[in-house]
Amino acid sequence: MSQSVHRALQILAQLGQGPATLDDLAQALGVHKSTVLRLVRTLEEDRFVRRDHRHRLSLGSRLFELGRSSLESHGIRDVAQPHLEALAHVTGGQAVHLAVLEGARPVYVAKVESTSSVRMYSRLGLTASLHATAVGKVLASDLPEHRLAPLLDATDFEAYTPRTITGAAAYRDELERVRRQGWARDAAEHEPFINCVGAPVRDAAGRVVAAVSVSVPDVILDLDRVLALVPSVLAATAAIGADWAGHDAGHAGPPEPPAAQVAPHHPVERTSR
Amino acid sequence: MSQSVHRALQILAQLGQGPATLDDLAQALGVHKSTVLRLVRTLEEDRFVRRDHRHRLSLGSRLFELGRSSLESHGIRDVAQPHLEALAHVTGGQAVHLAVLEGARPVYVAKVESTSSVRMYSRLGLTASLHATAVGKVLASDLPEHRLAPLLDATDFEAYTPRTITGAAAYRDELERVRRQGWARDAAEHEPFINCVGAPVRDAAGRVVAAVSVSVPDVILDLDRVLALVPSVLAATAAIGADWAGHDAGHAGPPEPPAAQVAPHHPVERTSR
DNA sequence: CCGCTACGTTGCGCATGGCGCAACGGGCGT
DNA sequence: ACGCCCGTTGCGCCATGCGCAACGTAGCGG
Image (tube, rainbow over all chains, first blue to last red; front, side):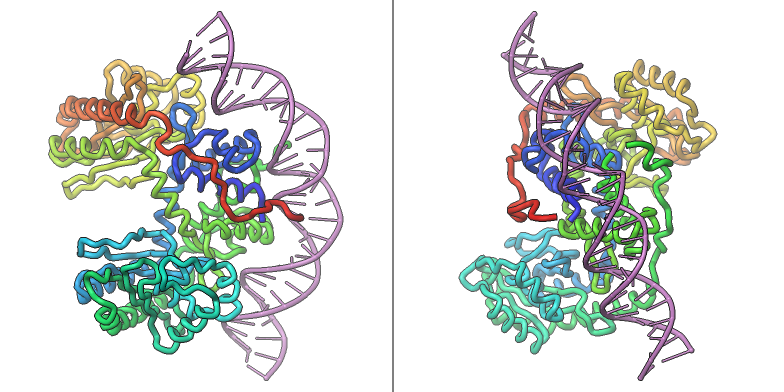
């Protein structure tokens, strides 16, 4: 929508893959150098980018602060963490994830690392696939049609493995199954040799607010044994939901009223032009 | 410089202090609701903000990714960490910080927590004071006049304690002393009962690229004993500088050529208006 | 059960803020 | 000492982003 803001964000994204020079950025965005300069200056004023001693641009410390806030703003994260650890324990040290829906994709907001030497790749704050993961199915399964339809349109149904569900129709069937049974599986649909089971965390009103999954390489447990973990997962999500309902009620109303504080600098915003 | 970008960044900063509604933001920025809406939509497209199930706005996962990159982009961080830990050890478990200059203020990019029960407050990614900290003095002492002057103008010389240096003239004298002796002190100038000593990390060309400091509450060690730590700090910074020169040379040239890869979406940028 | 309020959303018309261009300047390496 | 690479500046045009005011809707209290 807003051209210059979008470009500024592209600059940040680009700098996320390493420092760059002005012309690098200009070329990457396909705009003129001077345009980048103006955007960068604005970003610099607010500490979103910095320049090291010899004019190279990189991400600023403000992004670190905000990145931290970003994770912390998911209140459910702290509530869930102990339950995730307990779940990892009872399932024999498997990898456990908590994800929430953000826009069109699930995002991992908490995790417990597997204790086995075979590690699944995932990272806090990264997005997962909607159609090829247990958490994706769980989160999608609760969406009303008017939210689901645009998401499916935006999904490419990439076939990560031969078992990946491709096509919206088949996926809708899968979601119906998830809804009925109350949990989801991912039978080597994303990584060839990893099976997962996932279940929804519901708030007091019954809305799905997050999803928990357990991921197991099949050299550790075969699919049947993974499916046998479902009751443990359901117990964990129920416990998280209960805790969350409590915290949620306690926090009712804004935790900190965002107070009308404008930045004290720039006393006159538009002097001349 | 760029109005809409600046406003978008203000929105992110505001959301950093907690979720907010559209009108909250409009009021905080002093602009119309619809203006905020357009900016927020743009931020949303790129996952810089998200909306939870009922329309509250918070920071998006993209910020978490970038926040991580932001710290990692300081290559010196990884190089320095083991040396910082060694320094903390030989000084008896004191708090050790590594800071770099970003714009007008030092930023902590690595630290070792004190082992004593008296903890100094600091946080990775946060900025420190330029005039009232050892790292600030160290970083400022190496700046050429044309960089230093504007910084001093932008500094308010707030008197945190009775011993804080207030006024640019006195501060310039202090910088001269730092330059001559090769290290800086902070004798209860920022926190009433904490003394620090800091020293510069220099690259192969002799430029100051970072500063290391040791902070000690005076219930643990008196000022003289803190000053006695200077040789250890100097040894640490020398070691870091040497390691960094090696890494720096090894990395010569861009670590990853930022490659002209534009986002594959938005095939036509401007269709209509 | 209904009206009120609070919030997000839309369309419009104006002028401003941001754009590309082209030329300048300075530092570094050769 | 020269040339190249980058960052920086001033300018004029017009698309872009702005505030306004009206609409739609969902949640709430009477």
